[in-house]
Each structure stands twice: as structure tokens, then as C-alpha cells.
Length: 143
Image 1 (tube, one colour):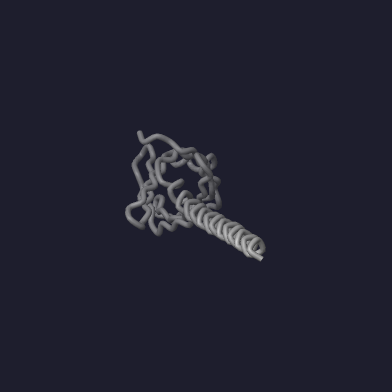
Image 2: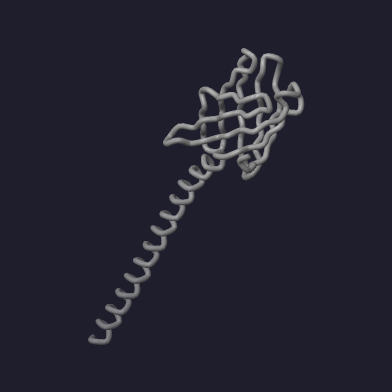
């Protein structure tokens, strides 16, 4: 009877250790997954911040190449478009993950821009009164 009791105790302890180890592992995996999801979202936003050298092949020459400066100050994003002839500040800047939308006025006309960053590449569309224009760019170094 004594050996039976010892065997029950050993089996109980083993079962308890296996159960607690699997619960700890499950909680660690859940915690890691939550952290990864959180970091992915933050990375998307951070991916946008910085200087971007861009081109718009079908735009008028003076607007066909330039730099975008995307900044984040607290919870607000700002966009400045730098062209050879000067700069333009964007309005209504909205960021969702690695996507950014904003509006600019070019020679009095409203242009709506939608871009998406994937690593060091940014691309999207500018909606102008004359039609849609493709935008492509790469992450640059501040001049």
C-alpha cells in the first residue's frame, strides 16, 4: 500500500509539472504573439518616418522629382514636399500602419495623395484635376 501511495504521489507531481509547464509555454507564446502584433503596427508607422526621394514620371517637369519629409511629432504626422522651386506642406495627414494619405495644393489645385511604404520603397497615387499619377520612391538620406 505504501508503494501505491508513493506511485500516486509521483504521478500527481509529474502531471502537475507537465500541466504547469505547458500553461507557462502557452502564456509565453500568447505574450510573444501579442508583442509581435503590437510591434508590426508600430513598425508600419515608423517605416514611413524619414526622407523619401520620389518621382512622378507623368507629372509636369517641375513636380516630377522631389523629396518627401515625413515626421511624427507626438501622435501627429506632418508631410513636407521639397521641390527644386520650393516646398509645400501637406494638410489632412492620416496614417494607418504603413499607409499615409494627405492633401496638397499645387498651383491652387487640390491634389490627394495615397502612399504605402514597404521597407525602403514607397509607392502610390496622386489624384489631380487632370487625372491619376503614379508615385514611386525610395528611402533617402536627409540632404
